[in-house]
Amino acid sequence: MPHDLTITDHDVPLAVRDHGGPGDPVLLLHGLGGTLDAWDGLDLGGRRAVAVDLRGHGRSGDGPWTWERVLDDVEAVARALDLGEPAIVGHSLGGMLAVQWALRHPACPGVVNLDGLRSAESDPGDYPGMDPAARDEELAKLRAMFDAQAAAMGGPLPAEARAMFPARALVERDGETYARPGPELLEAVRYTPEFRDTIPLLRRVACPALVVIPTQDPPGMPGGELMAAFRRGVRRDLAGLPPHIRVEELDASHDMLAERRDAVAALVRDFLAA
Image (cartoon, rainbow, N blue to C red; front, side):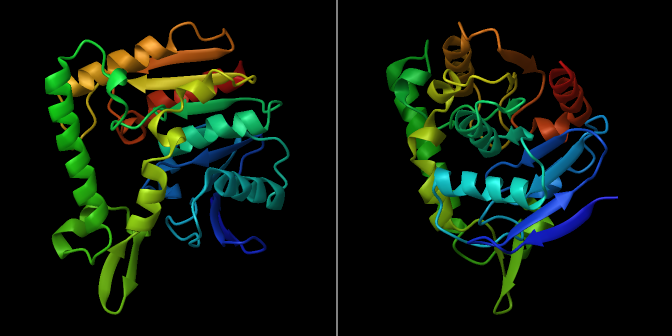
């Protein structure tokens, strides 16, 4: 049975769900705006699966966001639960953290990055084959959408919007409901080089790695030509990786964990077994 606990001997409290299992440990890191609930029901074949609420998310504490501090949080979880050198599986933002963990821990048994390669709001050169004027117009629309979303996260949620967020991501203050993370964390992440493009870091990873990329447009995002060009850029920049970094495409969107949970679990199991 899963066991929820909070690690308190750290600079921020860290909420953890230990799913147990007799096998080697795997740490599971969710995406931006997600929670550890994202990993419930993922069958990793008996491995000891431990999911974490990242700082500023779910029921973990708030604290300044830097990539190094968040990696320190992951270290604190591994140490507190005596996980030794765990494998890391991350989705989206969690996948970016998995890559950086691999750089910090070159002896890591393996990392899995589930569509955590670059922000959809990336540099213009990351959308090959698209008319520059149309690209820039679509990127401006995307930026405006993200600006509006970040601004909305600072205020109370209307009742009809609450169902869009995991229950664990909601917090009550002064009779109002707010979503975590707040706009400060979103802005702290959004323009960092690591969030805009993790692929240069991926090329430096020495341990075995699995990268899973989707073939469909992200839900709730402008699709069509911009996202098709975005996928072309990702495929272009993943070409020529060393053989210890394996790339798989999955017929799903960015929400692959929710849409194709069993397929994701099979890919992860196969990779970790190898």
